[in-house]
Image (tube, rainbow, N blue to C red; front, side):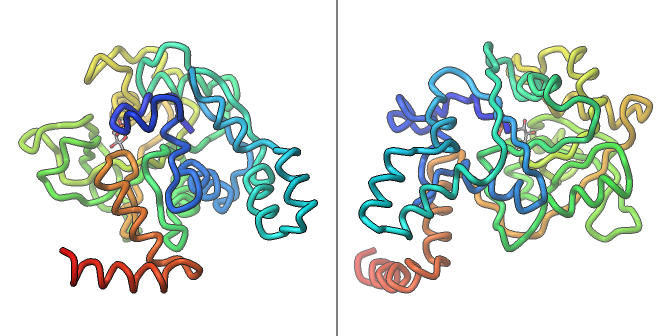
Amino acid sequence: MPAAGLGTRFLPATKATPKEMLPVVDKPAIQYVVEEAVTAGLSDVLMVTGRNKRPLEDHFDRNYELEQVLRDKGDAAKLARVEESSDLATMHYVRQGDPRGLGHAVLCAAPHVGDQPFAVLLGDDLIDPRDPLLARMIEVQEQYGGSVIALLEVDPDHIHLYGAAAARPTGDDDVVHVSDLVEKPSAEEAPSNLAIIGRYVLDPGVFEVLRKTRPGRGGEIQLTDALQALASDESLGGPVHGVVFKGRRYDTGDRGDYLRAIVRLACEREDLGPDFRAWLRSYVTEEM
Ligand code: G1P
């Protein structure tokens, strides 16, 4: 999980707090992503972090002092909430050093990953737990080999915010064969309106390609460029397929979308939802 970004869109909140730790309702955004990996059967997590990211390590570690206070108070419910994040997965951390782009962040994971397929999960994308995407991508990777990316149909006006894929159908309804990828193209240049969203299951051959990938868009080493190389030459690491996702995705990388994610998730929560929905309804009808 790449987590070295500065989160400048959320300043000043992110001046001293990693953006991954911003709460979505009452859990840091990154915990949803780790939970998603665990639900898909992945229990070994490597975070690629950077300076000022220590709170991430603390969050997924034990906090004995707090645990003891809650135990002494007999507050089992809160104690469980504290212990939840440290019991989730085996966590590892590596620092990116120079932030040279997403491709570079993924390359930092090479010594940890070794020679097996692995998943990359970007923290800005939250996938609703009721719409499993990663488990399906792992299944598709096992069936087709090579690498698998997650694709979402977006409004053509928004494709410039994403990597875009040229794809053709396969025998599976939700799976496409990817032949071409472009990082953040203009609407005119885009090969389609299929956008890459932040889930990847990759062949380790991508590391060799990333070592040779020159800085691309924004002067950064782009993962999309390495995947484009894989898609155009299968001898580098097998084919590239896409799983076209039709479920619910929340973007927490942008302030407006972050607010929408919180409202939607809060409305759907069993504990908070009924009261919050009632308040929201009256707020919208009476005060707006
Ligand atoms: C990254 C990728 C892009 C992808 C996006 C998904 O961009 O480079 O291809 O579409 O994540 O969220 P970023 O949003 O980090 O600029």
